[in-house]
Length: 604
Image 1: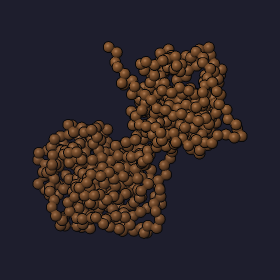
Image 2 (image 1 turned 180 degrees about the vertical axis):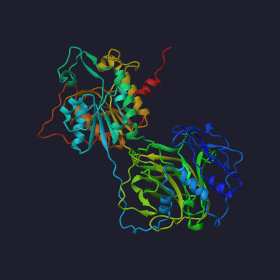
Image 3 (image 1 turned 30 degrees about the vertical axis):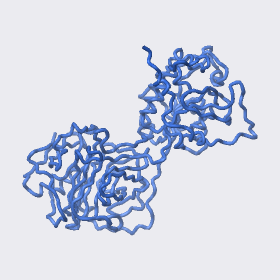
Image 4 (image 1 turned 180 degrees about the horizontal axis):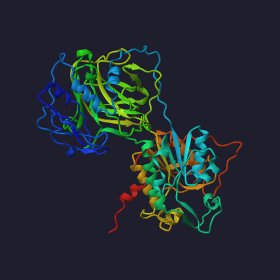
């Protein structure tokens, strides 16, 4: 059933009522510039009716030629009559308002709380490292190193009994198979901030192997190989796609998560509505519109505009989203970034983690520079728990995994009031406008890898022209016979590089059971051959998680020890631990070895 609020449009009070504006499409749909009604984008904008349909949190604008445009304000407003109609409509617009008696009582309650004597609590972010392929030769060593560092570990395995026997009965595990998307339930990955993926297609000697795969693991002597179990396509490509999709929302994206804004002429909308001082007897009035040409490069932007007045003891305007139908999990990120054009005023952003109407809002104030487009970063750690303009010192820490709205519950506010009795030093009565092109969650700099993948040297070589295959590892020579193992490993790598997740791709040469400690050679371009111990690979994977120099890099690695020479370590005098950053700092962006393939002539 669809409801429509209408009124006698010549009435001044209903002109104010219709100033309450939110905009969205049916839930989840993105709107392009072309899909928006041209008269919605015009300036000044008409006041559309607010239409509700039978879908929760869905409200649409319908243009009517009878609706007068938003009035233009000049100078300072004088006192006006309080608008009961706009007050009631404000209550009705937002989800689950309280009873009128409770709402009015809470809003007009006298502000009384002690002056701040201690800083608000800092946010505490959980951090779990997921190890996929945790029962393999590299994976189980990764788990051991992470535990010794005191990090929280969760493993993704196919065989629970084997995993508990190998890693201990108390291991935090997910039983799943990356080749079967249905087994990778998103809820299992809550709290995961980093992934080390050591999953690989199983290769073994045709003649058979020992129960502990000793022939395969030793990595030196050659045995005629074959694929055991799932195909390379299913493990290295389909499995990679499934794993990335399962963890992407949890580990975060390098460029952040867009909550509202315009990207490539596509609008990611939020259900904004005006929440002004009319709820406290004031006469200030604001709206949120789409400006077709007011963006940074002459394109689309949102526009928070209105008039603020201190008449009737008022003094604030704000736009606030309705409660999200599903809370936003922003725990992979460090804060919110607003891209806006300043006007020398100070504003507030309020984020709510509770669906209740009148509750604590986690708040940050920010100053803007007049006439300049700027990016305002507000770390979650800087958000103050505020209730009715007072700091709440015993409030729980901000929970970035459960954002329900922006006033957030995102809210963007221009107010005379700061916190705890202080006033906004840049407050001026009258008309204002704040172009807002985007709100996104961001990962703070320096960005470190969130997804470390153990691939293989040689992945670009099977298709490389002029290569002497006799000097190449068996997997390169036998790529076709082994189900195009390296071809699909490369396709899996490409999925990671295209995912937007901060990553490191490690391409070890032949893996051995020798101890770590030998000197290493890092290279890029997929040219080297040699050997390296699984223990060494596990160590550098863990080190990569903490290094910005490893972020978004692809590289090959081997030890300096020739195949013909075994490497041993004196337990009484082990080699010193490596500073892997020395190696990571030598790596360059964008080098994968595919450059040679891209330059190769195409056969006629």
